[in-house]
Amino acid sequence: MPAQAWRQAPASAANDSPATLGDAAYLRLKDELFAFRLLPGERFSETAMATRLGMSRTPLRQALARLQREGYLDMDARSGWSVSLLDFEQFDHLYDLRLVLETAAVRRLCESDAAHDALGTLRDFWLAPQGERLDDGQRVAEMDEAFHTALVGAAGNPEMARVHGDVTERIRILRRLDFSSAGRVACTYDEHGAILRAILARQPDQAVALLRAHVEASKTKVRNITLHRLYTARDQRR
Image (cartoon, rainbow, N blue to C red):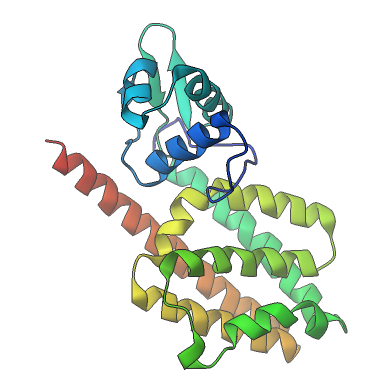
């Protein structure tokens, strides 16, 4: 596995509204990374990137420095900027940590009298009738992340929620690929619905088993999609 990882500190989600030109440059550049239009290991200069994105170098430089701090980019005084390599082993560790946090939260929720109230919004969205389900993969991806974040938040431990938020940001680049097919969107509705029903029925073992299967399936899917996209992107450049 590559030694250099895409390891980043918590940062604004890719769909945040930019407040400054530096923020706009950051979101544009991050989108280039997430869409694999900039490949891991690829080198570029500030001048070339400014031309590519159609922006001045001052906000771009701010964005580059921010992405370097977050672990997406590397800078060498002699060779310039490069995209950090993906480390799938590290992503596996992050998914393991995510499961520890989420399964602990689910068990707490199964023991809580307030679970029905805390999960009301999730229930309305994920248990909606078939005809009322969304089919927009990007929107469902956002709601999927919100689902897992809400489960941990509802458990009532702010430190657990903080760590989970960091993990969520660090796996977003892969996780968002999970919704590139309509079939995966439908599966997510079904799986989230089953998890919610088990929590509301106070069946902790069942809820944890369903959650674990759901997260493991997502991890496998995004890993395969990532490898395929990287291969395809590199092949198209030959």
